[in-house]
Length: 386
Image (tube, helix red, strand yellow):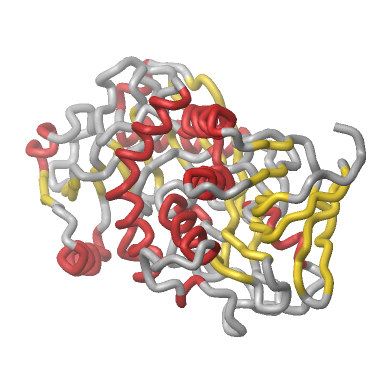
């Protein structure tokens, strides 16, 4: 498309990651005309790079605001993923593989209290009994203890974003790729559209779902959400089915088994601005951790290493709602490591607001309040939610 002004739509979404595409899907199903603009290609940033675990890694470390979104998503994801699969013809490979926690040590009491409060079915296994959950673990330390919950599922991120894109196209949603949003068109404190390198796009409402890049468009405004890129490096082993059967989490590193036998290992938490380069030192560290957890992986090659940029926020709670200075501009960003697990609920909550519906959860913790719109000098502290 050449540089030009385009037809006005009801809702314009900036960003074609999981958040932007799920928001578009919900709006389109409600009969709302929607267009997505994306600076690169649909689903090729953080949404593609993640592990796809439909749970926060250590859920007891997060606030109740994150937990409420995660619980809603875990309940509704299976049916929606099945619908996306049927419409797109692409299987997102949802698997309810369960999650095994190892080495939680000092956090055990906190974890037990959390699972009792929210009704998670955690069961404790130790020593040789762990073989009933994950046969490939290193059992040389008889004192090893693990906590297992069988309700946790996963999706294969690259397949999910491909399925979502195809699903949206079949639903009639326009996705303008390689279209860089440059500024907002506003009149008297109301957003009317977006200036891009391909021309002006006009809309009744604009949703900013640009992941780690979201805050850049708001830098000229005094009240700006603090969203910063947080790099995560990952690797995948080309293994065989059955080498790993459960999601296994140990000392901040996770192993995720895919349907075809591949095992994803991740991930780091690095504050490197918008740098997505991978490093040999991280590759070796992840390989070493994978071998420590599942020794049999030493028999299989690392197929690929990559990095993605998570949209980190001050407390790991996303910004969901209307901007206080710019009416008709809505944010859905700052999901940090939990874009998949809390993404579905955050999109539904935003659509509730856009369409004046009863919200699925209390929207107050996610609102763009004075307390949450911080100055640039305040540092993001994610030490308790990594």
